[in-house]
Length: 228
Image (cartoon, rainbow, N blue to C red; front, side, top):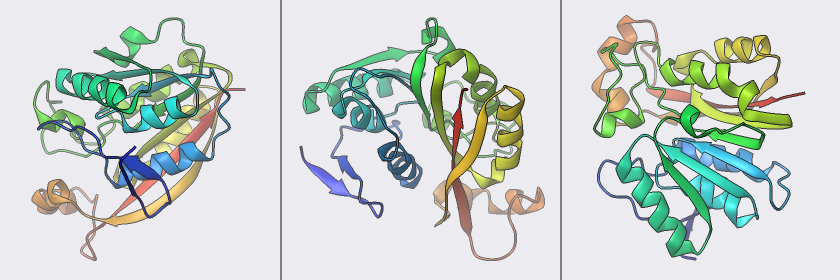
């Protein structure tokens, strides 16, 4: 398996990533690091929400999990399927909204790297590459849906691992998951330099109070929430 190593010691395969498909980045690697610390029994049922190239789904499948990977982008679905074939790992990749492919729930682990970048446009894009990151003015359009759906997605003892920006309010996520009856905590926290998307809307982010005048650093968090 051809791969590259991350700062976390996680190896990401060199994956097929057509234009418009979200490539593994710092948030992917941070979530992969959290995934590596989770006990995952062979045959465990895993769902990945917003699979992109399938990088995280492949990590779970390599550990013997039965993975359902979902994405709203047809290009991402095709890329994940091709990457599964290329790495000779079984992935069940589905197109559409995650709620439509949850079945009866009962997942031992749900992985989520949802769109979370606050946008000046309150409308959520329905096509194009921006669907992978723009999530309304507060960045919580998909995050809130995942938090609300989590209890129905998870089996008893199941775990949600979700990464998002500190700009979206990690405390809000923790509070919402607690109200859903889960036990959440922040298990990873790191600051990374702004990418081109944040730099392109720096003035708006500062005007909204989402960014200060100091160094252009974004906090990323991984939240782990367990269903009792």
